[in-house]
Image (cartoon, rainbow, N blue to C red; front, side, top):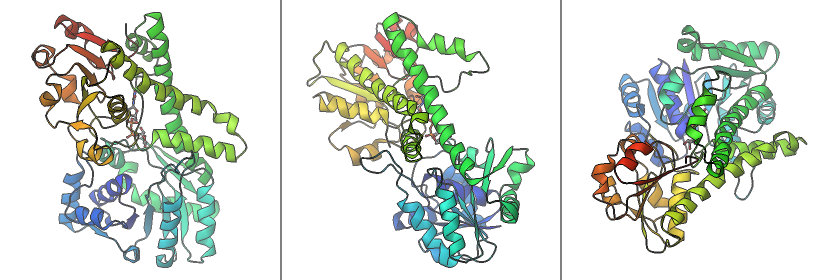
Length: 437
Ligand code: UDX
């Protein structure tokens, strides 16, 4: 199939490369010439394991190309819209400027029978409005909404072998045709018995935001238990293990720590609250504001633990911050709790030396005032306290005996509860986890 992907950010670049990997002829389109230039050279504009490999093989096979000119989408049968829907400045609502621009941009190049497929996370009601716009333009094209559930760090795998597919389609004949086309796009996944939920636009849009709301709730739930564990002298990691054995609850996404960040969960729960207010049902998801508040409190808690560990005096103390990305295997620092902790400690006058295997360039761009070290051991050298805030493998595997020689004071705050307290204490460290005695 000939496919165009409009927007080559995280979602779009991975989607374009993965669709080509699956055998389709794909053109990726973006307004940013820098991004397109990198992608044309098979360079991923961000860190994502496995992406460059499939970019290279798809480009070599001639099935994947990139352009800054949306007119090049003409001739594709399916046009994916994968542009960003960031949080509006100073508001909770999502900014739909890029989605609207993508639709307006593609309209003149649509032909009879083409299918525009929205992938971006949008407030419920957006797809119906866009479908109307496409109908109005009289192109004979139609719209489907096909939310994306990929996780950064596993983006290629999640796109090629998703755990489910959701198609939001129009009623009647148009919807049936849309389903047929999407089944062709995802033929490989369907052959592998991936479940497909075919539904209306509004449900498809809501599936995405409710999935993210649920995941955020799960994380804040366990973090709320961590807050209680802290005052009760209990251990939230054992608690998570114990409740996680109940299959109805499940152990995944029950890791307490400094909370969630990234380009999706925080902005999506805020946009969901804002949209529910607009629909007159603000009270239905008002708990999401509490989920957000619990999440933000965990960063403060980590900072308080550092201050406490330093005896109340942060000024000019050397704090080694391990991690900047919002999660491991990513260079993404959007809404990153790790970067936020580093920035706030720096703001309190601490001499912060932060390190991360991939996210230093993105962090420097936003916060050049921080101290950075590319080598973990350099970051640790002479530290008065160490804070682990992104659970990269190399930090999980640090040898407490070896690095004990480097630091000034053997105090570690484990903001992700990934280190073994017994091992670290045995090596003479003061170990403090989040919600652990
Ligand atoms: C998320 C959803 O998982 C994905 O389905 C959706 O498409 C986009 O948003 P992503 O942002 O890549 O994906 O990250 P995810 O792996 O979900 O982690 C989100 C944040 O939650 C990270 O900051 C992570 O550190 C944190 N987290 C996750 C926890 O604090 N505890 C956990 O138990 C799990």
